[in-house]
Image (cartoon, rainbow, N blue to C red; front, side, top):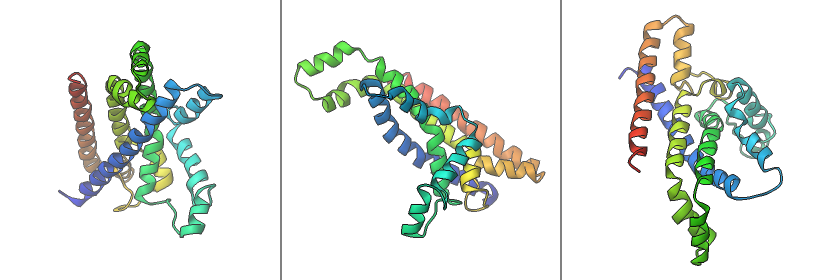
Length: 220
């Protein structure tokens, strides 16, 4: 495959896979806490975590720069300790993808967990099961459709992420140009033929992922 297409495709897949693993691992835990626990400012915490779902991606990217940039709140500390900054790296694309994808995981998984029959949960406790055992053997298995849907939507969102990635990772050919950024570059330079190929590939790939996920979710 021509390197013009190969690198953006492989980078997008790597970024989406890594970010999706992070999203599922943290998103399910956060969704469980929001669904099963009561604490002060819970809904405000939910709003804060899901805000990137409604904010323009460039605004999300701006916040990420303020927090994780070389002179950012956290980024400056990392740079002082390691001499490394996440800006303009493929890890920055992972971070951007993670932040914009996490709300989808939280919303779908939380809704699924909240729909689990409370009688089954109470029965598990009555039989002497701990909260962890109940979560792993009752709540999460019964919520698997919602969790699966959240994982797929997060992966698809990560594949298509553009604005926040461009702000934080930039557009560096052979380093940070994911598929959406490559498409933007082709369109900006008038290389419509190359852009058409990438757009068609991204559309077919995303559609195939959603189709297979829908087929799988009906079987579980």
